[in-house]
Amino acid sequence: MTITIRPFREPDRPALRAMTIAAFEGVSIDHNIDRLLGPIAAQDWRERKGRHVDDDLDAPGGEILVAQDDDGRPLGYVSLRFDDASKVGQIPNLAVEADQRGKGIGRTLLEHAVARFKERGMTVARIETLEQNPVGRHLYPSVGFREVARQIHFAMPLTGHDDSSGAQTP
Ligand SMILES: CC(C)(COP(=O)(O)OP(=O)(O)OC[C@H]1O[C@@H](n2cnc3c(N)ncnc32)[C@H](O)[C@@H]1OP(=O)(O)O)[C@@H](O)C(=O)NCCC(=O)NCCS
Image (tube, rainbow, N blue to C red; front, side, top):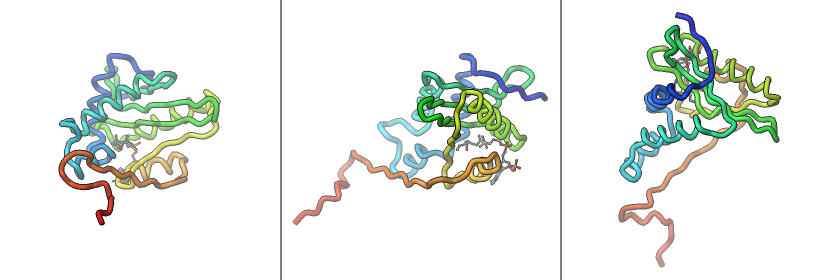
């Protein structure tokens, strides 16, 4: 099988949405929130992730590179944003179908993303991963990214009967 990298086409959308939702099980902030607090507004993290994917695919000025097999079927993708003012290129999303991982598709997508950033005049590339994601922690430095910061994400339920305000009653 030959893997080709090509631009996103609209018929890819359902496959990219589905593969992202499947891929981010256990390695997404939204999933962590649901695990801690339960589904938000009767929507579980998968629906929120699906909307994030649509936002990503529709982002003005953004680009999506798709890895396809010989039949044109999407096996993975990477999304790119370009900040022309700061010359910083950002990768919001990267995913590969579960049964296609470990074959170098993620690395190839990242290498194409970096090449595209250079073509567009970016001088720095950025990507994020979670501490709980061992693949991202291994793969990104091996492509050339260097760690610059760690962040802590908090969430608080705003429904129910618990007093989460933190206010002290005298
Ligand atoms: C991250 C992801 C896109 C990588 O795609 P992929 O096609 O499997 O990537 P590659 O095959 O090019 O490389 C994977 C690397 O991770 C390594 N790896 C796999 N499992 C690992 C683990 N548990 N711990 C550390 N490294 C691991 C592989 O050995 C390989 O490294 P190598 O090339 O030095 O041997 C894919 O795993 C995925 O979709 N994951 C779920 C979604 C996700 O985490 N997206 C990124 C969010 S930041």
